[in-house]
Structure formats: C-alpha cells, structure tokens
Image (cartoon, rainbow over all chains, first blue to last red; front, side, top):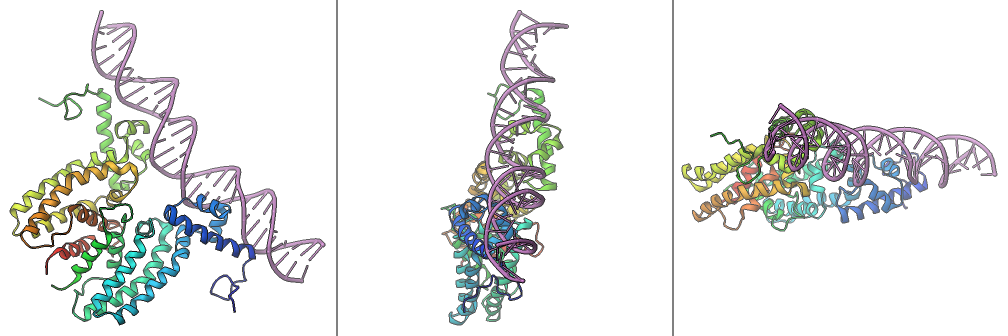
Length: 195
Length: 195
DNA sequence: CCAACATACGGAACGTTGTTCCGTTTGCCA
DNA sequence: TGGCAAACGGAACAACGTTCCGTATGTTGG
C-alpha cells in the first residue's frame, strides 16, 4: 500500500534507506530555512539544520531550483488544479481569472525571495522556471482563453507574459509595507478588460 | 570660468588632480562595463577596465549604488524634467502619464540589471533606491494627481507604489524575447482608468 | 626649487557563498 | 558475515564584495 519507493517511477533500482531518510530530512530543513531566511538561504545553513554535509544536498538536489521545486511542489499543484475549479464555479471567466491570479499571488508573496528567484536568469534556476511555467501557464492560458472568448478581455495577451508580469509585481512585496503587490496585480488584471 | 572644483559645493577643500582624473576614468569605465555586463559587473572588472585598484573604486564610490547613481544621474534628471513638459504638451493628463512612464520604462529596460537592482533590499542599494525615489516619485505624483483631478483615473493609487510596480515589470525584460515589459506596463496604466 | 605632509593609490588579504571532489562510512545482499 | 556499491561528510577551490595598510604622489609653505 505504502509507496516505499523513492520516486513515482518504478524503474529506479530503489535507493538506500539512509538516502531516502536524508532526502526527507533535507526537504524539512529546507522548508524551515526558506521560511526563516528566504529561498536564498545559504546551502551550508540548510545542511547544518538538517545535520548533513553540503555534499549530501548537492547529491539529492543538484541545483537550488530542484530543492525549491521539491519543497513547493504540492502548493504549485494545488494552485494549478484550482484553475478549472474556479472557472466552473465563478460567475464569469474574468472573475475566475482574477481569483486564480489571487491564489498565485498569495502563494508568491508568502515565500520570501521566490518571486525574485522565478525571474532570475541564473542558469541554476532554469528548472524552477521550467516547472512553474509548464505547470501554471497552461492553466492561465485556459482562463485567459475563456475570458477572451466571453469577450471580457482583450485577446492579444499571452499567458506566459501575464504570468511573468504578475510574478514580477510580487517581487519585494514582503519587505515593503508601502508596496502592495496584490493591488498592483489587480490593476494589471483590470487593464486586461475591454472598456 | 571653468569649474575646476570637484563637486557643486564650494566648501570642499578641493580634491587632488589625480583623484579627479580617476573619478572620471572610473565613471567612463563603469558606464562601459554596465553596458557590456550589466550593473552587476564585478568590481574587479571595472577596476581593471579603468586601470586602477579596487580600493580606488571604494574610495570614490563607497557602494555600488553610488556608482550607478553617478553613471545614470543625467538620464534620471532628464526623465524627471520631462514630466512637467509632457503634462503641458499632452492632450490629457493620462496621456502625459502614459508617455512619461514610457520614458521611464525605456530607460530601465535598456540598462541591464538596473530594474533588478532598484528593487533589491540589499543595504548597498539603499542610495540607489533613495535617489530614484526622491527624484522620480514627486514627478509621478504630479502626473497622477493631474489625471486624478481630471477624473481620468482612480485616485487611490500612490506614486510610490505605481513606480515600484512599473520598475518591477521591467525586470528581466532584456533577456526574454517572449516578455514585453512595455506591453505589461501599458496594461497596468490602462488599469488605472475609470472605465 | 625643495622638503614634508596630507591625500590618494594599489592590491594583498579576509569573509561569505556556491560548487566540486575524494577518502571514509554505511546499508544491503549473497 | 564479508564485500561492494551507494552515500556521506567536509575539506578545498573559485568567485566575489569589502577592508586595510604600506607605498606613491600631488600639493603647499618656505
């Protein structure tokens, strides 16, 4: 019943017990470190908190992006799955879009440094970039399409661009009481409307 | 006739000739380095290009922000001064606002890494932050006020927040052909309108 | 013109962080 | 239980920002 294997695939030869244990320990330590020091927390800090050497981190998560993805995968999945749900339950496609973007923004602004990392052109964050885009852009595109088909918004804006704009607006939202990312995003979404 | 002094003030005891020469050399080298490698270019690279030691850079420009401000001061001033001009020459305050924001965006997206630096919470960038805000927020506020008084836009958005949002939208615009910061900013400004 | 002094310079050195690498340890299976 | 592959730990290296001090140089009073 319980999936004693490491990943979802069944082909991998199965990892050693200590390796599996360490992977989980690292995920927990990283999650805690991200909360207290942001996703830019030094690798050594995570290693210390987990009680392992830095080599162990790099063995399990070759890049920081892999670690971030692993830590936040559940929440990203939840956000992605909320898209169709909202589309079905909202009064209009535009309302669904706004609600969904709200979810995304709430997620981003509560993860210190994540919005910054998402836009980084550093090669180490390629995986992060790719994962978020693969998972969320199609959902956004669906909502965008629905709203466009309903004639509520202009049809010349791509999901990728919008997601990126929203992500950008979330940068630095946590350390600045005079800047409310949610409000700016609301403005951006309002700007999509036809009249 | 010629201002042989270093700064604008007359109280400073006057700097040594080699110091003044180096300051100019550094500004030129930094400007060139910023263009070719972005404003994050390593201090050593700038020093090498200028043919001076790193100590000399830190003596003239204690933080990277000081150097960036010095390099771009002219362009920021020009942008600030364009505000009132545009307000006088445009058909409506909202049009003036849009044009002015366009100027700002053009400036930002052509300076690799500058938009990122502007939003950095790193203490070394405090000066940069302060300078841009001091110089541009009042101009933006004037345009915003005029448009609000004319009933063209909602009145509940502060200049600081808008500038910051626009700055955020410019992040990463240079390295991503699929992301057009200008279009996103246009959307944001459109979102300000009252129907 | 020269000496002496303050100013400015150069770059070595240090701290922090990411990343790699290898000698050692440990789980697993025959 | 012995042996081997897997995994571990952390030293070591590289890149970068930043500081510091011995040295060089321009300035100025005599």
